[in-house]
Length: 487
Image (cartoon, rainbow, N blue to C red; front, side, top):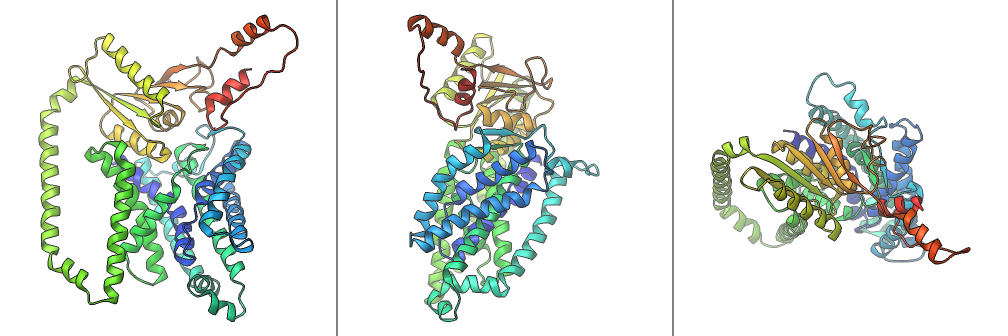
């Protein structure tokens, strides 16, 4: 249940970002890639303020304003300098990477030891499962957002924004500045994206410089799913469709993991799913203008589609039941080990291989007295949380987290089962305790950094006298920043 509740909660939080994309995509016909940067900007701004002692609810409007400022710059470049909207978004998104690093001061800000919106909601839990209670509150919040945003988009200002995108010549003839309307709309959209960023950061327990990568694809997927669900021009229904689209998308990711799809294939499955939805959506749209052949074909074969769908579900459940029954005894006697990896970098994969080799040396043979389930998030930071929920639901006995992002996702969710982290530059910076002897009782692991002190001793011995030493590092990686500080 936690897997599905967690996926729904993530869907609600990402719905704010999807609503922002909905405004730029539907109203101004722009796939605004600024959101890859404004999402992180909202998270970074709010996280810094929370660390400084701000109330987690008061940082929400600040993150909204931060995202809106990013959108304002994109809108200004697009309208004043006549730069294509997509290119303007790419330029701002690229620049925001450096801005976000300056705002954060480092590539990752842990929030697990600070009060957040999630902890505030959990403190008034009447006794329900934590994820379920959070989901109920978020559902109520989304109803309010749905009503308020619909009211705004149906107002004179919202209708003027829509008219600006549909017919700028006509709206200009009415004395309305199309440039101002575009800047306002793009700013509002990115404000919602920034709000989504800080909410996701508080929910997952950290803000990371890479958390916005690929956001445009996920938000567009939610918008496209919403449009496919409700083919209507009514704003009320369209906004609801986007919210449900975000939830359905996150549920689809959880379902893919639950069924057993290789996480390495999640990105290509997402691309194919969005492509298929677009093809069907555009075919239906064009069919409405023609003689309705496509709709007639769908209607004629709907029983066949339904039968195939039922057959697929029946076959899958039958296979799952047989598989579960056959491996029931094995699950009882075997130690179930889950490995969570952030991406396919060489260092992380070598760590995983080293762990497997050492387990073999200690006498743990996979399929005999242990089972190892390795799941790779492929750089999708939100997917780390869904992966952890999936492993929890799969009754995993031991969690191995490789990389900083994976470690944060694991220790944020796993409070009883043992957690072992590896390839982490500074676990204390991530919230995994405050010292080697002061940490959660279920968390342990290894960490290290370059032998900077020894290296400097050798350098001064080989090259005595005053020297200027230059360093090259990537501030987007916590380990390089930590090693630089050691120097």
